[in-house]
Structures are given as C-alpha cells and as structure tokens.
Image 1 (spheres, rainbow, N blue to C red):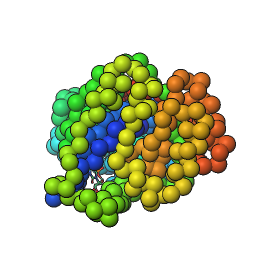
Image 2: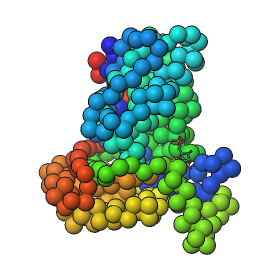
Image 3: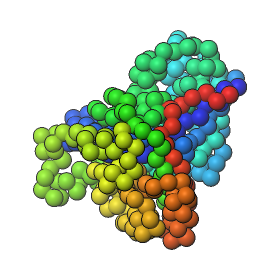
Image 4: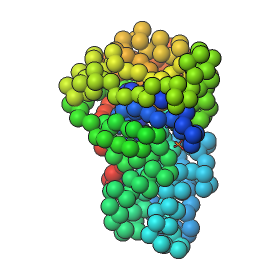
Length: 305
Ligand code: C5P
C-alpha cells in the first residue's frame, strides 16, 4: 500500500490573457502550495476503482471522470500495462470545485502512488508531461512550493520563496465550474468594451513586486500584491463572496482574494495565531461553511508511507 500526500493551491497572482483558439486562456499564474491537502492511498486491485472519505465525499465522482482514475489509466497506458490493477482511496480535505485544484491534486497524487505501487520509476519530466495531459493545474500539484505557470498554467518555473506564510481558506456552500468562471470573465470583458480575444487582452506577466515579496518572505508586501483576474467573474456568479472577503479583512487579515476560479476565499495573516483568530471570526460571521487556517509553501505530491 502506498500513501501520497498532496497539497491544495492558491494563486497569489492569476493574470488571465485573451481567449485562445483552443478554448484556453494564456496565464501568468503564480501557484502557491498549502498544507491543506488530500491523501491518496493506492493498493492492489482489479481494474481501477475509487473510494473517498471526507466532508465533501458525497459529491466526489467515483467513476472515470475522476482525475485520479484517469491518471492511473494514463500512467498504465504510457508504460504499456494492459491490465492495470489498483484501488485508490482518496482522503479528501480540499474543498470540491472550490478553486483550490483539489481534483488536480488527486490526479497528481494518483500518478505518484501508482508509479510507486507498480514500481515504474517514471522520471519526473515524464510525470509532468502526463500531468499536463490530465489538466492545466496537475503539473503544479506534482511540483509544489511556489511556481510561475505560463501557457495554460502547465509550463512551470519554480520561484524562490523565503519562510512560511499563514493562510486562511473560507469554504463556500457549493462549488463553481472553472469553465463557467472563465466564460464569465470573457463576458465581463466584452461588456466593458475591452474585448476578450487574444488580440484584445495584453499577455499577462508576473508582477515583480509580488515576486520580491515571496523571495523576501514579506507577508505584508505579498498581501498588498495579491491579484486574481478571475475574481470579478467569481463574485459576479456568486455575489455573496463579497461579504466573505470583507469579513476576513475586518477580522484582521492582511489581504484577501478569491482562490483561483473560486468560490473558496483565501486570506493572508501575519502569523499562525492571527490566522487562527481570522478563521474563527470568519466562521462566526456566517459568510462561509467552514474556515481552515493553514500555511505554506509545502512540497508537491510525495509518498508518506
Ligand atoms: O485544464 P483544465 O481541464 O483544468 O481546464 C478546465 C477548463 O478551464 C478549460 O476547459 C477551460 O474552459 C478553462 N481554462 C482556461 N484557461 C486556462 C485553464 C483552464 O480557459 N489556462
């Protein structure tokens, strides 16, 4: 039996370019891996089967639409294994459809777990290519730490980071569909008259102030530099998020933003004590279903036992 621990992510910068011909958007995407994570355990089985436990387990698909199952089959096919046998158990802590790449994390964890179970020793660059086939956010879940994602988010460059940052995540009731949030972003741009095509939107780039804040371990400077181009779209689809963001800021968070395509909201705190207080205040505010204090950066998908 192989257990792999895998982090959730928050995007400390999510710069979204124009809509490409292939339906994706070019990104300047600064991924940050946090300790809030899932565990995926691979054990010998017949075919590829899944089970899941955790607060959101009831809404996790247990068929081949789950990225963990697709990852197992993709890895087996890559190595020419005709009859892959594995049972994958997902201990789920990452909010489902929450903008924290929980499904992608399970895909990355399944790649690492099956690779170990089947003793394949697949080199990391090959795992990263397979991960990119599974989804835009899967390669980062393998890598962890802090990284700049270009292209649709799959072309990764690890970034220097100093120390530990303290985060709070406010979980909303129900998820948001990532494609729907990107579509809303395009709609808002069209409505504003700026346009949403590749020639209308300047190609985004990483913000040097934000990169310096990460490299210096400066939480105040990082909080001031947090940006997410998908935030207006997520708030447009889920107006209640404005109150969640306000509640966290009023509770003493240094900065707040929607995590990825949402609806989870992320807050940066100055230390662990402050993060615990902000989480408690957020829960008491009634503007979220759950609030988790955590920290990062942490490594990507790794075997723990
Ligand atoms: O790559 P992934 O399957 O996670 O993407 C899900 C959807 O999110 C895509 O089909 C697309 O609608 C949207 N997306 C995008 N631009 C990106 C990443 C995702 O438009 N860079």
